[in-house]
Image (cartoon, rainbow, N blue to C red; front, side, top):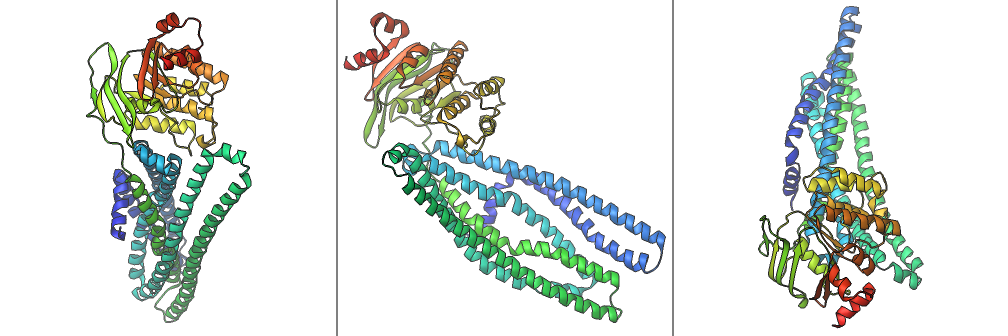
Length: 560
């Protein structure tokens, strides 16, 4: 991607905010004009008011200067408010877009790359893009108008001094461009090291029991320290390069500033410049340093953002699961069944995971999906939830609104529970229901200010269930929702499921805790090696196995 394409890419990202940007532009234009008037008024204060010893003119000019300056402050306040709103919303929308894509990436890619690694990498890219795009680009726009005003004012006062004042710009731009190349290399290395860190974290999180068993704590900590050291070295080098660029720019500016005083002094002696004119020139030269410094650092800014955009685009190019609308027939007709599955099969890497599944789900019932590890439970739930498509067969689904917790909760780890609930509600184009807030408060996570990444497994499960309930789903699919829950939380979830059934919500739930499944379900589906072994209602179970424990019932059915 060349530089022009990067600019176009950023402009495309900012497209939803063009009205606000136009408003900011107008405010900046007015502010720039007013800003240029202040030194001119100050010149009149000196040359006419003070040197002319006219108290009336002096008072009027001082009052006018104060009014203009107050107007500038008001315009800047409004401008900053709009800019902050753009920055905040921009990052939020980028995060939502990133999460939406993550949830749709093909399972084989998620398994290969690791969902934690992909999520963290995406968050890192979004952070860089949002930080730079949302603030720096608008700041550049602000300084453009400021610089235009300075140039016009400079030329009107004395074009020779104006030409002299801008003589150092080419040198500053060349220095920054040269340093920017090294900063870009550092940024690329920084991204690579962060990817290593995220991969290391995922590996560690997935192997904590093994690490403890083999006493690898110190070794893993050493690895962590090495990666962090590399990152810090890269950051330090980038900061030193930026500081070097700044020091060179400051040095050039100071040399030019003193030469400017020399030239102005000669012109005052020759009566071609007044004391007030010198004040104006000094003020304008000070003004010019800010935009020039920012413009010269555009290369440095894009040295950071270009690698992030490339990596983010690479992340967004990961293929998603194909649209499965051809395999699912949506019907709104009022019928006795909610889901009807006929002869459904699914193959994963040439392995037949599901074989000729026939199932029938009625409205408002709670179905327990029971089976050993690898039986096909999660795959079936993913198909029903619309996360993946089947290889053949037919599924008639009469509910468009589905809530699901499959494998592990999907959320933004760097946000609080409340922030996650707000974002998911926005993604589903719904307001946050009163019931959701009450449930989150009951679970103790609504006012919890900890980031979700610091939650316990049980807390994450609670949040996952709440997120699945956003938007009042007609069908709720829960894969191992009781994982990591303490007895109190288990009772809370059990009561919640009971309440949901009374509201007519159909529930499909799987769990290795058979006793809990037998407590909450109305119907039981036994699956083994990708095939349905038996279907029972609660009454049929009680009648056929009156004196047996859930585990015994399960083993008997598998042996039949």
